[in-house]
Length: 325
Image (cartoon, rainbow, N blue to C red; front, side):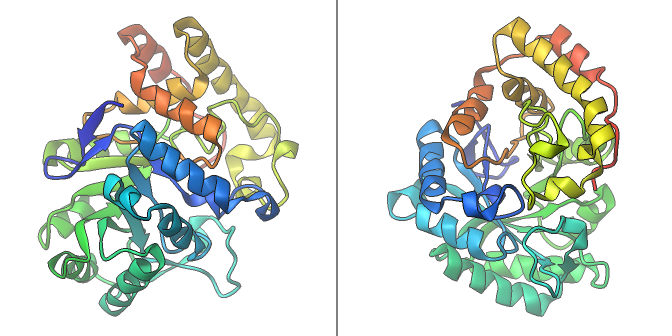
């Protein structure tokens, strides 16, 4: 697989990464999850050159880090660029399927210091390569949270630190305390908000940008055609874009992605990912999957080159019906 670096100062990674959330959280019926298959997918990803492996303490909650830790044993750990996140906490019900805005946030320095040690125990490693603030806590100045994140670098518990779902101003404020290695936010053909300010700022500062949900939670890959297909516990049932009327309207977007895919001999998922990859040198999408065939499909996007005409056609896609959350 083609490689890039996590910004100007980061390690080399494959241009497509792997998000591990869905292996133990949010999507599908929990009864259908198979940890052995998921572990195999993580190891297969490394064989394909998909080296950025992304998790978070809140996924599960907590069980996804344990799963990733079991996958990245021995030589596998040395081959992976391991990223995890901190700062979101489960609500009092302990629900594993709430959307992220419904979680609490904790950016206190004391919490950060405890959380990194807990993550390392679950992951079975003495350090992570990238430790990310999952969401900014509005009750704690970001400078204080970021100072505690910087302590994890000084202690050798992580190599670099990053932010998630932040504004350009929040990145600037964090940079006054310690360099920001990466920013993770949603970016796809139907979620383009970061293109206005955050991504250009990252490009100018040499900061890696890690798009999550680059396939629109599977929708842009053509994997959801009706609301009724979604499992009962699938959190997409609560998202506006997946409601009956909105979903039917949004299928037109999938049709246009499919048309480009047919023309260039690729899959819709590969086209959607190739469009994300075309947004910048240090843009490394982290599509999630627990299915070997989808992993291979996603990895293949690294070899898809969109022409100027293809990109213009995709750029012209209308906004989707419904908000993100």
